[in-house]
Length: 248
Image (cartoon, rainbow, N blue to C red):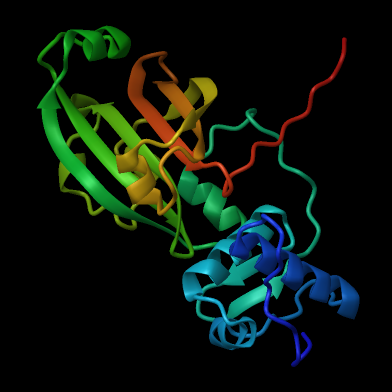
């Protein structure tokens, strides 16, 4: 990239991270950087563009979501190789698996991790009696330290004992279930747009009322037992769904 790139600031309404992403994308295209070309270090970009590390990482996460950049842990950021769009929702894929596929580093901030009795409503949805122990797991999900989503899960504890003791700052829930013999098969998912309340906005580092994309899921095992309920709320500017619609 040019050693004299101007700071990503305009008089337009776009947030600074979006201006930064556009500047980096324009520079990649202008210089004709090929897939695998290394981008300058984060510290250098922050100094050059006069922006914070948080702003830069939002911009880089956006470019990664667009398939234009990819991170290699410990090595930095690179121009991404073109890939065919992955269709959704044909695959039941964990957040961790998605991150690895995109060559990004997943992590979590655990907000709650505890056993609690099922309510009548929870028991009805999970096909267990009221009072049965459920694991309540709530996490802020991050990609390369950028806050992407808040994930709230209720899991039938008897299906996978010991999950209340797992360190989910790095562990994958799906992988922990698989290790305990629980094979997930499908999910029934409802998707809707919402406005972030104050608590969600604080966890994601966005303004209250900002758009979020909410996925409410019931996930089933291969024997058709409901295993868990999950609500994942993604920051609207950091997540995208892509699928294919075909006429018959």
